[in-house]
Image 1 (tube, helix red, strand yellow):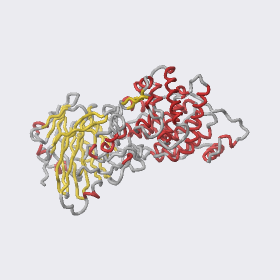
Image 2 (cartoon, helix red, strand yellow):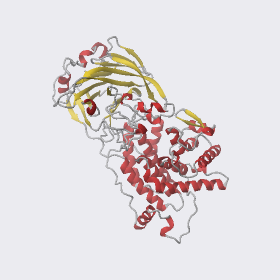
Image 3 (tube, one colour):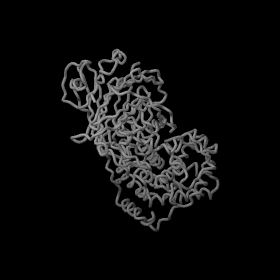
Image 4 (cartoon, helix red, strand yellow):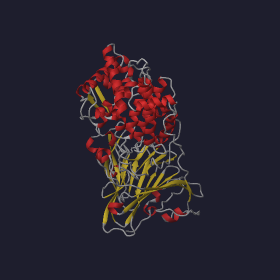
Length: 625
């Protein structure tokens, strides 16, 4: 099959933009730098030879904190060791009078909840992801809830929502009623989601942070029951923390243990024990560049939230938090910022919906970290290019290992693009919030390669998508090259090339994607190349599909030649997508918005049958107005 130049297939009179300077063609391979004049008749390879590549400096060099336990004196080391062995706090001083169970401080919550969800609670409903569920009809025990509802109810995340719903007095009655119902349904630890280590860690920390909502009853016996539940839950977590499903759940449990040590009477030894365990767990959770090993933006948010709430507990007792917690926050925030588009909301990666900008902004402000997005995170794996008003996000790493994945997605070499706050190219997202307005039966499909803006072969996933959010065999290696391209006339672009081996075992083909975003952000050129992995390609043909899922509310107009589509964005701007050779079709798609709601949208698809010896596909996305 003869290769066609993208420049030859475009109608320059329709695509050229006055004053934008010459377009930057795309090459299929790297070449030695060479300077010289550029003209529109040059081939892909000839043009790129005229560019002078400048190697991008590495991402911010962030030194990891020492994840050893905080330095303490000999007496505290002994107390911590004794507590780890299971000895009670008074074992080292048997003559000291044992304190009664009580909380010693009130915490100011730095992370407000959802006011609408809080008002729904006062009206007798849980409100989650746009779905109302009557409190009276809720099963508080047994595995009958959707995963998002399990996290909300058993983790008591709804307490923050209720706190935001108005005056405390009417909220107290609601909180006490729901808590009493939950305690009656779960009187003691038992197998099931109610006593999942992660849910229990969230629950204990919520009880401690929102204690005024659940400990303001005039009934002394009711208050005593709640305090007893807090104490017993803390003791259970002390023993079960190491049995968490994953490291993020373990971190949630350790933050709760540490908070209990800070806020409960005679909690000094527990606090020492919790701090040591928390810092070690964080060291196992976070990569060298600050991204979680799960590669999940939602996990990144959760980790930051846990630390922010714990630091509020330190502030409540006027005690300094270990320096390692501040260091880890400075590591965690820049990768999260890298996943934000121009509208301030989250990109759709590893099952995440487009989490709203106000929630992200509140969290970052509460963290106290002032920094810039991490643009070139090799271990976190997401490349970011910011070009004036355009932001490109590119998944240039293997999926997370099975032991780290929660809602793992086969998204390698997918990308998202936004301009001036408008999303042009997206991934579907939403697998992590399936069970709300997105049906659970769609979760597996939303984790598939086809739900992301990248290439698939025979509609197969580049990495196997398993049940329960796990991933199987597939992409194991990704090679990345990032550089700037500059010309003598001053125009330039950023070029990223990456390749993965996810299709080598089954098809003997390596997928390589090259993206070039012009410095003015008005043009993105791409080339997807399938290269035979061995010296000799396999016989036969395979079906290939390139999918470009579109942002919401974009109007489309198909070109007469079938190779182009005009995109009319909600802000009135016009963009054109062009394929160099193969026709572009329009298909239905969906996108999960910031509330986890499915929004009907469409996707551009380039399909072809190619020989197993390999082939290349070139395309262009350019702003016209």
